[in-house]
Amino acid sequence: MSIFVTRRIPESGFAVLRAAGVPFEVGQDDDERPLDPALLRAGARRHPVLLCQLTDRIDREILGGPPRLRGVSQMAVGTDNLDLVAAAELGVPVANTPGVLTDATADLAFALLLASARRVVEGHHCVTGGRFFAWGPQLLLGSGVGPAPDGTRKTLGIVGFGRIGRAMARRAAGFDLRVLAWSRRRESVAASPDVHWCELDELFAQSDYVSLHVPLSPSTRHLVDARRLALMKPTAHLINTARGPVVDEAALVDALRARRLAGAGLDVFEREPIVHEGLLGLDNVVLLPHVGSGTHEVRTRMAVMAAESALAFLRGERAEWELERSGRD
Ligand code: NAP
Ligand code: GLV
Image (cartoon, rainbow, N blue to C red; front, side):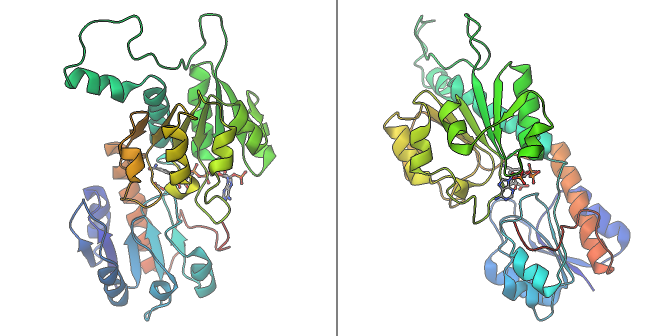
């Protein structure tokens, strides 16, 4: 009876496992690369509980064994790498780490918004590249986020009004942004009086900044496609801290290249860790290596939550952060 920890996690998680006195094996003691899928399969054959990462693809074959898993504890909130339908059918419980990373991820989304709007990375490269010759009346002019001198407010469109979407709206209030939001359930937006629910296409057309916060599922894959990008203002910026495949990356490259879209701030990519080479050559993008929840404090707590869920599964108990076993998105 042991736990397979697919990759090295913060020490706080190992401390929970050690204190419980349960044996565990670490698949890969490496922070840089995902665990090889063959090693993942082999580990799942030796251990009935997995403590995994979003880089591990957990399919029906892994879940069903033999041996059939007693539980899968994922150290992330997104679960699109797991076959939840198979898990539900096979009766394998799954847990994730919701809530604890909400503020860190919204902070990063807002950082991307500001960086893209105010051309922060271009400015950095101007200085480090020895091209800062003097203050200039027209040097690196960006797009305002707070109100313009005449009081005109900018509009932020939030796609997916869950935990992180709502945290984004709270940050937007501090910048006096007008906030539109789309979520399937209109009532989740109605609870926030300063946020206006909006049809998705209208949100794309009206917003100066669009920030994505939906999970990846069949219905959100390429939700931002060439047609929706064409609805956006040429002065607008797209921010994605959700999942890469929510955006058609090739269409995004075309729009950015043609300056039909002013900029994009991306923490996630369609085929991570591969980044569309068109993005790499653009100056109107800010690109980060999927670090939305990446603060010391948050990762320390995520590791504890994931370890506690793994222990609960090993003991045949219900985990506190166990997902509903509906198998639907
Ligand atoms: P959440 O609380 O579940 O919010 C997601 C919201 O999206 C839901 O409230 C849901 O509201 C809406 N939604 C719209 N279309 C949906 C669909 N087809 N399926 C499911 N929900 C849909 O999740 P969260 O904690 O805010 O996290 C959101 C996503 O952010 C995660 O799934 C993950 O992919 C991503 N994330 C990324 C990072 C990073 O490092 N970049 C960190 C954390 C999370 P309705 O039911 O009203 O539609
Ligand atoms: C990170 O992307 C997460 O889903 O927790």
